[in-house]
Length: 144
Image 1 (cartoon, rainbow, N blue to C red):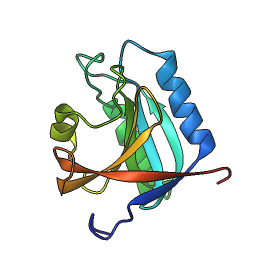
Image 2 (spheres, rainbow, N blue to C red):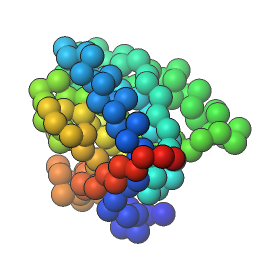
Image 3 (cartoon, rainbow, N blue to C red):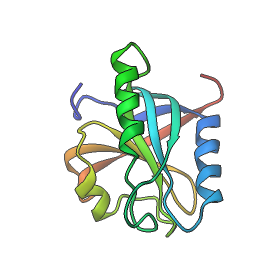
Image 4 (cartoon, one colour):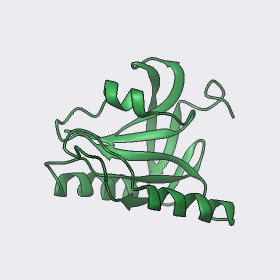
């Protein structure tokens, strides 16, 4: 499905949102990160990954070993990777210019935890934010 066909909203369990928020709050001096699983309009699972960036207080880089393992699992019939999440210790849950430069996988959902509710974004060419991201409404649901 192309970015223009994908929905502007995504379902996610309240539990996943709470776990990501708690993870971000537990580490205030550097960015946390992880992978999201599901389909184009629903996040069904997440896994925490090590942030291996050279400057983890300013950017994130998902541990390549975790990413490779997730892709292998997906090819073997496991959950589909649909995006990633990270935090902004500065408190702004909007993608930065650095995020835009690093966003290479078209259609991926990015969740950003900051100083308030977690915000959702989708990687699209010519997006509203830094010409790389469109906002996505997160629809919390209680059970998945």
